Image 1: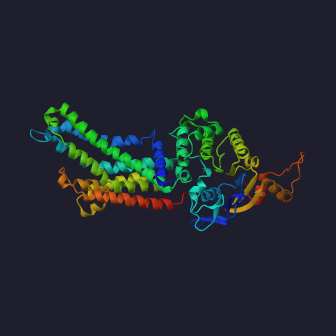
Image 2: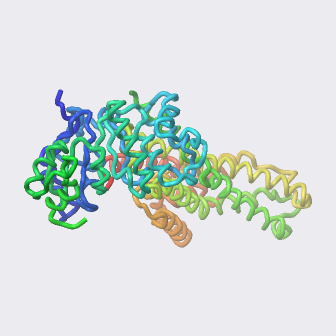
Image 3: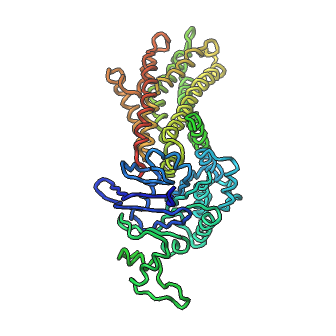
Length: 254
Length: 256
């Protein structure tokens, strides 16, 4: 089996006349935290929707776990937990009831609800209605929904959207823990470059529907350090930031 | 995993979703509204209609059944389906639902079964409220004579069979409410369909409207022999074929 959990082959997509993705060939290594980076409107969410089979791909090939999404949608989705943009929650229900809906869909054991609540630190708030949750709690519940069924791959679209610095740090710690201690492959999209820099092992940069770079984050720094002309800082580390590289690649301001 | 497992889990998911919402209450409120209006009218103005040796249930049931079939049933189905699907649209939940490992057909079928169950509940309630209102009129206004007559069979059968004749309307409204994020579209369609039905009732073309099949079934009569049973079969046929067509359309739909 391929070492890549997700593979796409020159993926393209257009909304009517407007081409939003072109030649996107992703290769997401197993066990990685794969940052899918790009500004708003660059095509990140469309790519994620294609990966999840929410948008029909026609004859284009998208494989997850070595299986084509066309024809294997259900068997693939059993191994994937997804959080798409704003966490999809029913605010009139409690956190527990929201999880119960996902548990039924995934046909997971009942004890998994308590387990994921503990993982995201929401056990004490599970019986409260979600409309009373803070944004950070909703994001954590969204991740708990994605974790139900113990999926091998998490696809998270902007999981830190709208969070304050403490909330962002919480989510970051959780994702690192899920990768390092639970062996999950995490595909995470974001436009918050400085945040992604602190957790991803691999990265792909997308801009205007084009893939500008893909590979390990260390390789990205090495490849662009000389090009940007940065020198190591006093600690001997790279003074180049992901933001510098991104600006250089896209020649645009964030 | 077999189809029944998917379907039963989808139904269980939908049952959780409607907790703490107005959706189940609307199934009781709509028939209660019709019966209350008929009750108040009968209570206040019954002397004009009811007299010695006249079965008051004829007039009373007629008002309820015609009011329900012609106006309230189509509007209620429209509001119920719109309210039900609004839960998903407001929370942008369709993308999430379709990213779960359940077939799209079972998500649709779960919704259709719950909506159908709620609408059947409203018809049971229509019958129950009608009987209670008549019983109450018999106590409050004994001179009307409600206590001396009954119409259990006609009321119960009409309630059940109108529900079946409304199958086409149910499946159309559910599809439209799932397809359009705006609450106005499914709710407005039902409202205009009800008004168009009232205007065009009696014209041959009105027979084509699924929103008029419940009233078409009653055929302006409380005599069971006069009822137009063909509307039941048409309603059921459109319910089944419409559900299958909806599944095909929903399966092909991109969630963007």
